[in-house]
Length: 107
Image (cartoon, rainbow, N blue to C red):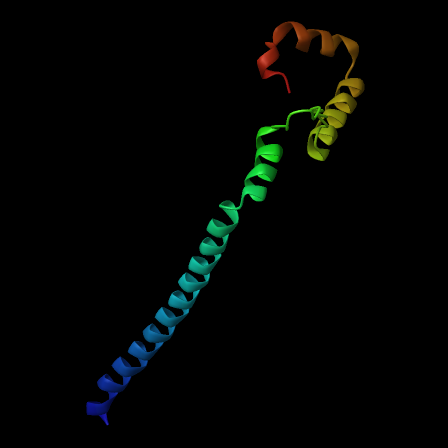
């Protein structure tokens, strides 16, 4: 019985390692297929034009570029919280904070 314990343990460990390597190989094949599809997509002229319009704000001749800048939800909530905090503090503390702290460090 003891003579079989070590080989069986080694066999089970190797089988588990083989299974893990098969899963890793399948994941790598999936990633490779995804990258190949992205490469094919990025060589499409329509995709390049759409990305240039979206990322670089490029426009075609005759088009008018309009950029609307809206703050994100988190930025609006942070600004509202800061305004509530400012309104909740007495005016003299706001004055002291405005005079004593540089603009870059104000929260």
